[in-house]
Image 1 (cartoon, rainbow, N blue to C red):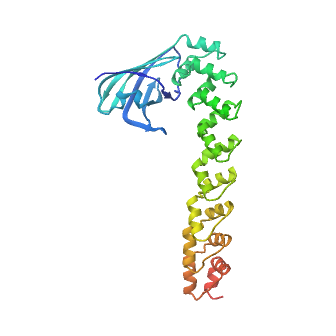
Image 2: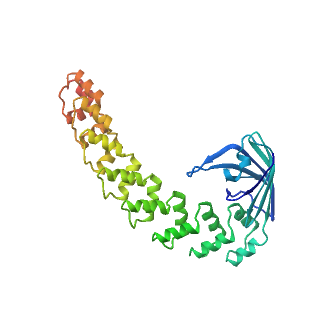
Image 3: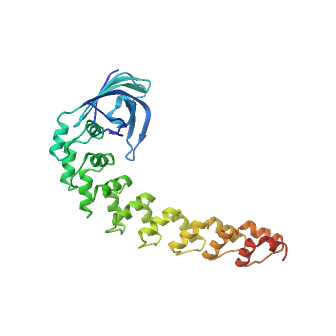
Amino acid sequence: MKHLLFVTGLALAMPGAQSTASTVEGTWRAEANNYWTRADGERWISLQLRYDDSNTGIGVPEHELPGLADARGDGPLRFTLRRDAGTFDFTGRMSYGRASGDFRFASNPDFAPGMAKLGIERLSDRDVWRSAIHDISRDYARDMQQQGVGKLDIDELVQMRIHGVTPEFIAAMRDLGYKDLPIRKLVELRIHGVTPDYIRAMRDLGFKNQDLDDFVKFRIHGVTADFVKGWTDLGYRNLSAEDYVTMRIHGVTTQMVRDLNALGYKDLAISDLVKMRIHGVTPEYIKQMRDAGYPGIKIDKLVQFRIHGVDEDLVQRAKAHGFKDLSPDDLIDLAIHGRRWLRGL
């Protein structure tokens, strides 16, 4: 079985070795079961290149490599990856889900002079290789310049391309009011998934004219639109960005609030909820203390209980030694000075 594939859209990591000529030759290998699934549900096949003692990993959309994705495939393979900076030709063979072979990269002699006309000058052979690896074309460089990002060098283009900073992304952010963003910030937004759609969803929930750093923190700590809406539905409105981040850091959930409401603890401040999570004052712990004879204890006292190790077991042991009807403060004192108390002093 022979496969002839024309491949586009590959994303590769930059090899460690430097190309010293307009052609590069090496070997490649892949396995049909060596893949991962992206957020959009599409599978990507992992393909490994080796040349000059260097290894480079490639992620390839499965639909672009049906031959490599077929675990039952058996036979010769040939596919080509064309880039503005040059062309990769792959030959090899698939057998029982494993494929390997040789590749050859030939640079495009028009690429470097064309980039020089755009102000990106003196590209080395290695720069041309990187441009081909990351699909940096003259059109991409020109479109980025038209978006007003200023004078670019090849390193900045590679960085933006790796992280998915596109002209469309920049334009969409500008439409949201975020203009003249530096390359560093554009890359940071893409790394953490701060997309225009995410910003619009958060704005609909009240986060209008928000600083981008807040959205980055949100994404880092998992503050989603659903998370915010859950708190709004519970009556917690006009919370600050820091409130949401702090709750995510300490694991304060809407289910915890519902459970506390059922136990009679309602309208608690965010600071109290965070304090309870930090010290392990869970609904389960409150139930245990209630069953031990201490219902309706205030939040601050429950926190002190946990800090000093007051639990159901301590209450039972105190009763077994004749200490009954102890106040909450007595329990704390017992936990601190237990040996003296149990000696009857």
